[in-house]
Image 1: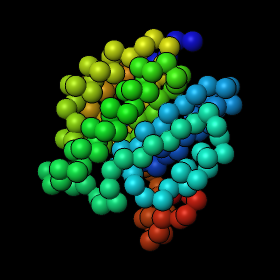
Image 2: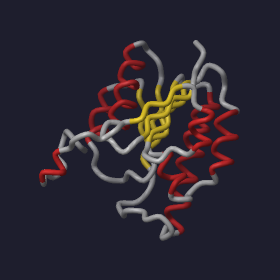
Image 3: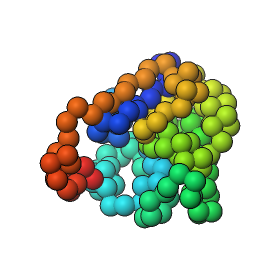
Image 4: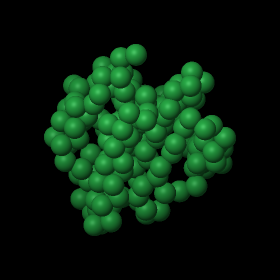
Length: 171
């Protein structure tokens, strides 16, 4: 199977959810999947559910603190570099048919990673590995190297009515 580069971006909800759905579908076809999450050290539901799916490996990087553009800490850069390195090791290892870089777009947007390095490294992926990149604000360079780009657009969201994030739905 020839692997492509997919991107899920935009300001709407569902980017990570779409990538996780794709991982679930691939696992059902006996594919091995590595999910690398950038800037996600909170207690997200997927951390618990993937334990029941032997073909999916999930690794999280970052801290519990928010990262703000122009105000990143040294640890934020280090964690982003570790995450990208972990993901690319998975891509090159031959052990995974799919590698998901969850929130890589935001790590690039926050200047935690050199976008040219990321793009050039992804271009060197083996032909049989599917790469999925999520996160708002996908750069022009990421969009250019992608074979599939889906933009999630927010039309309406319960947060606009004062809803709080719900366990099992938003996290």
